[in-house]
Image (cartoon, rainbow, N blue to C red; front, side, top):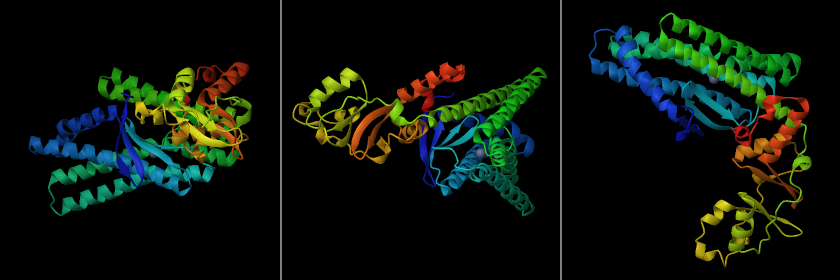
Amino acid sequence: MFGRRFPLFRLFGFQVRADAGWLLIASLVAWSLAVGAFPALAPGLAAWVYWVMGIGGALGLFASILLHEASHAAVARRYGLETRFITLWIFGGIAETVSEPPSAPVELRVAIAGPLCSFAIAGVAFVLGVSLDLLGVPLAVTALLVYLAWMNFILAVFNLLPGFPLDGGRVLRALLWQAQGDLYTATRRATRVGQAIGLLLLAAGVFTAIRGNLLGGLWWILIGSFLRRAADSSMQQMEIQLVLEGVPVHRIMDRAPLVVSPATTLDRFVQDYAYAKGRMRYPVATAEELLGYVDVADVREIPREQWGERSVASVVHPPAASAVIDPDANGAEALRRMIASDVTSLLVASDQRLEGVISLDDLVRVLGVKSALEGNTRLAALRASQLRR
Ligand SMILES: [Zn+2]
């Protein structure tokens, strides 16, 4: 259910993807609308009409969730925060920004944009539904609009619950951050509320299930436990950031990385570097100057019979800003850059001179040592794959 994500399309310049489990949920929604909600809301119509309405309702809900997330992403973009993906999954959508908001007012605006958009859609759909009904438009259309109004209203209200990382929790965090000037404490408090709300939803789910509504209860149990886990991992991310911000890159990087000379043939590169070290990316440099890096994936694109003649210089990537970091930058910045460009290592250089290589594993090691010293078992259990999420 939390598996593969596949790209759908671009919306306002944001890449929209869907979790594989989402398709299942979308079909379930269409089905439950067609056989349950719409026959109750608009009785006396033909079965096929309910199916058309059900599919329309599911698509409308999908569009509503997308617009909600796109509003977050659009406001974030106005403040220079890039959104990597808008992902649809079983509990709605997520707009993932590359970095944290720079200040409390920005966080507040980004957080509130989604619920405001949902309230607006609810208002428009409701007014449209009621007026079209007065004009004599068929019930099938107006009932669908009223349903969408109701769903958007619920979407806005649920997201405004004040538990982090829900939108309301982000608003709460921004207010606490503004009042106390401390992002860490604000996050801790807002995530505690998030965990408490998760627990309440869980309890409500169990209660609902015991009273006989098994499916409804199960749904709340799922949402409650998801919220608890999300709150927990938000706090963990905050702790990771805090630890890594205190560590300069030059202190944890590999100071003597394996450097490839530009004259090396691809044959030799594959044998002596790629297979021997098992890394994906190697710096290419002469004694004086950093030329860039070579990726194992690029070599694969070149026909094998040419590996003997062609040199690494012919496939070298220039040291772009996204692949290089300053030795005085901190670990949190390194992690942000790795996530943003979806890589596991960066070249460390100043003034075109290679000083080392920093990898995701270096960052994980720092977190491990730090947590061992402080007895923080949550950070100690981290793995590189978890950092990249
Ligand atoms: Zn939202």
